[in-house]
Amino acid sequence: MYILGVESARGALVRSTEIVYQTSTISPLGGVTLAGFIRNGRGLPADSLRVFGRYALVYLLDGQGEYRDANRQQFDVNPGDALIVFPDLPHRYGPLPGSRWSEFYIVFEGSAFDLWRSVGLLDPTRIKWPLGPMQYWLDRLLAILEPASPLIMVSRLQQ
Image 1 (cartoon, one colour):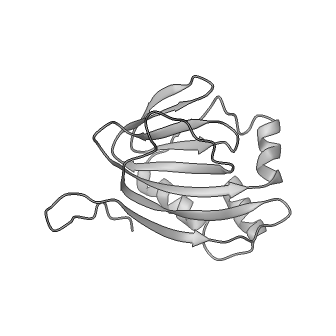
Image 2 (cartoon, one colour):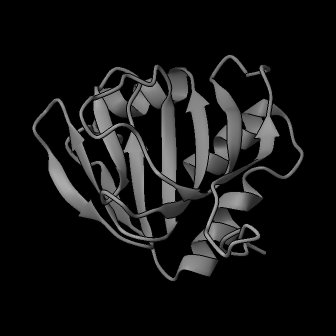
């Protein structure tokens, strides 16, 4: 079960990262390559956009923030919102200045997802997906990572 926050000796929240899955092995259709939690994250630098090079699903667990990209999309992000990161779309997301947030993320790649993008099932104009209730969706996302072949994990993610 997910537990919010880690406190330092002074009671201040500190950033922590927990990688729960990592591999370089993918199927001919693609695969999940990395997944984990970032607690009390500060996000990406506010003055620049980045290109990630892979797809990712970022599920906000705690805090509030914003998203913006090179397509001039900009919107608020709240707990329970999932963001889809596209490999070639410059973007920035993170908590509001001076605040922090906690997230669960899954990084994935491959021709199955490129095909979904080519037919509009993954659409860079539809980045934000509100998903609730949060514990239900976090459990579903974690279930994708249960030990299996890369192809099975791709199928789970597509579900």
